[in-house]
Image 1 (cartoon, rainbow, N blue to C red):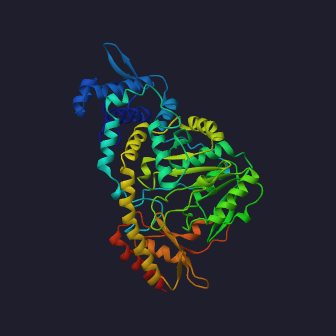
Image 2: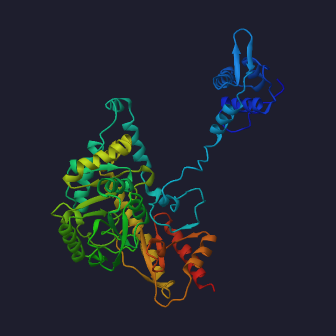
Image 3: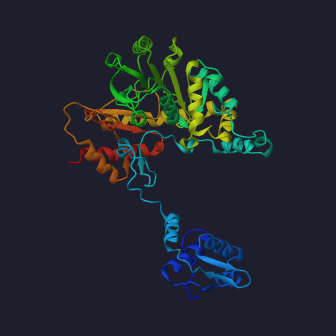
Length: 482
C-alpha cells in the first residue's frame, strides 16, 4: 500500500485513519482487491495502538470499503461502493444542505446571539451579572455533595417534572420573604431559565391568532417567542408609570409585563397602574405574565408588592430566574401559576424536556436554604450599587447636554433618553465607540413598532467598577466628535 496516512488532521485517531483510507479508495489510489497492511504493521508505522487501527478497519468493513478474509488479510472491496461511500463520507463532515426544506417564514427573520466575538474593553451590555461575584467555591462544594454515589443512587430514573422537591420549597420560601409572593412548593414549576417559563406559558395558553400584549419598548425575546407560537403580538406603550393599561386592546388574551423594573427603561409600575391592570385582566379573563427578572438587586426603598401578591382572582403567572442573580449558564428559573393552570404547565414541561437538570437543582436548594443566596445578593447589591452610582453621576455631568436619565432603583442596567431636538446620530456614535472597544446598547433596539425613542441602555453587570469612568469618558468623546 503506497498511500500515506497522516495523523495531523482533526478528529480522534481511528477516525483519521478511517477517513484517509476511505478517501484513498474513493479516489482510486487504493484499487479493488488491493491488500491493506496488517493492523499490527500499520500501527507500528503510525506509532499508534493496534486497537486504533483495528477500529478504523472495522468501520471500513462495515461500510463496504474493505473485505476481511480470515487467514488472508484485509482487501479493498471489488464491488462499487462509491455512491454509498460518498454519502457516508459527506455525512461525517457536513450535514446535507436541505435546500428543499425550509422553516416557517418567521424563523427566517430571527437571528440568535453569539459569543464567538472577543469581549469589548469597556462592556456596558445588558442582562448578565458579574461572574467574578459568584461564590464558585461554595457552589463546587454543594454540587460535589450532590454527585456522591450515595446521593445519586436515590434517583432510580427520571426526576419529578415540576422540579426537585427541596428546590420548589426553597423557592417558595425565598420569594415569599424577599418579594411577598404567595406560593407553596406545589405552586412552583422549575424551568430552564425564564425563557422556558415563557415558552411553557405560551404553549398552554396561546392559540394561533390570539392577541398577546407586550410592553413597547420591551423584551425582544418574549415578543419573538410569542410570535413563533402563532400569536398576534401587540406593542402597548409605556410611560413613567409603566404599561398604559388604557391602551390595551379588548381582544388581548395574555399580557406580558415587567412591573418591578420595566425592561429596558427601568421604572417600576405605579400602584394605581397595577390595580388598573389587575382589574382589566379580571374583567376580560386575560392572563398577566409578570416577569420579575432582576429586582433582587435594589438600591432604594422596599419594592412595591408584585402583581402576584395583589391578585385575588388568579390571573397572574409569576416568572423568576436565577440567571441574573447567579450565572446564566446555570439555566435555572421558575414560574408560579394559579392552581387551574398547574397540570397543563407540568404536562407541557414534560413534553418539552421531561425535567430540568437535577444536580444543579439540588445544589441550588441547599444554596438557598443555607442562606448563601441571600448573602450573595447582599454582597452583589453593594457592588452593583456603586457601579450604578458612578454611571448616574457621569451621565449627569459628561452626558447632560444630550441625555435625560430614566429614574431606576433596581436591576443591572439603566436607561437614558436623548433630549428632544438633539441633533445627534446615536447609531453612528455607537458604531465608532464599538470599533474602539466600548459596547453600549441602543434604546431604539427594544422597540418594534417603527417609532423608536433614541437613547442608551447601560448595563453594569459585566464591567468592573474601576473601568466605568474611563469607559464613559471615552464614550463621551465619541459623542463630541463631529
